[in-house]
Amino acid sequence: ETPTEPDPDQPPAKKLATDVAVVVDHYNTRPEVGVAQRETSPIIGLKSFNNWVKSVLITRFAHPALAASKLVGRGPRAPRGKVLDMGCGKGGDMTKWAKARAAEVLAVDIAAVSVDQARSRWQQLRGPSFDATFAALDCYTDPLSKAFSPAKLATPFDVVSMQFCMHYAFESVQKARCMLDNVSRWLRPGGTFIGTIPNADQLLQNLEGVPPDAPDLTFGNDVYKIRFEDRVHKPLFGHKYWFYLQDAVENVPEYIVKWDNFVQMAADYGLHPVYKEEFHDVFSENREHAEFGPLMVRMKVVDANGESAMDEDQWEAANIYIAFAFEKR
Ligand code: SAM
Image (cartoon, rainbow, N blue to C red; front, top):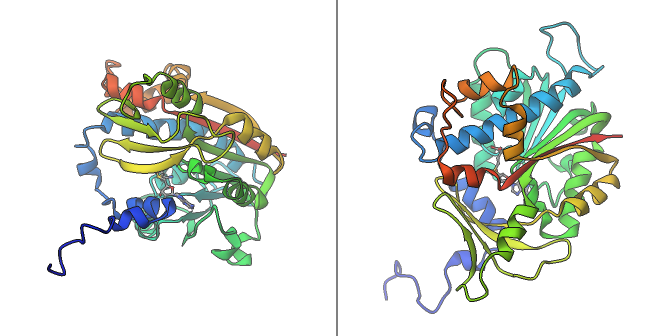
């Protein structure tokens, strides 16, 4: 036996890791690719579409909340308001916050390598920018005040954004409550909480469609695959599945977010839903819109003739998600 050979009696190191460690390791080790390389992704159509949905959500719900902020200067070009980008990843939304003319963004993610990449992305922003502070934190276990000084948190947020990341908190009631406390505690009344999460109805319906004699509880297509561990629904938390998305996510453990349960719990934190839509419906609702229609062409979701950049499999994968907005009252 040489030291480089793995011991066949020992399970691979990953098996010993907790689900959180698998998630962190996955996001930390996914390489950051430049714009040019991103264009060559086999699912570039789907990636562009997801970005367009986030832009629509931010423009419809975050811009007005930033503009309504009484805390900073007014005027047409003045930057306005403060954003918390929780689960910011590699900073994919930095340009969107610049376009929304945010005055300040606090960005936080459990994956420290991603946080560094998000900071670089912010530093490289061209044109109008904003003040930003970046921190690594497990936002579903620790309070934001562990990562940011009291001075940084003294002015409340106008917008809290959680894009494609909130569902990781639904492993347990403790994590979901810690996440909601972090969302709400420093959000001003009248402020907005927006996000994108997996579409529980869609996922559970697909799970029910898996034949009883199937070797495992997997469904999907060439672009995405979901494998549940349990056919029986967990009542509220911890209903786990493994998620694969071509050229993006390599088998990461995720959790079902039951919408009614989420809404009920969010109410305990003064958060009330104002919008919830499946991604397919976000598309049909906004494709003819004076601003979001042309934006779809600019973001290469469709070409000038209205032809989609997504094939059938990508389009099906797109509807794994829903977009939402809550208001703090
Ligand atoms: N919001 C970014 C975007 O839209 O591009 C990144 C989305 S990525 C699919 C999910 C992110 O959630 C990852 O960066 C991951 O590290 C982060 N995440 C998962 N668990 C977290 C936790 N407990 N605290 C903070 N971030 C977490």
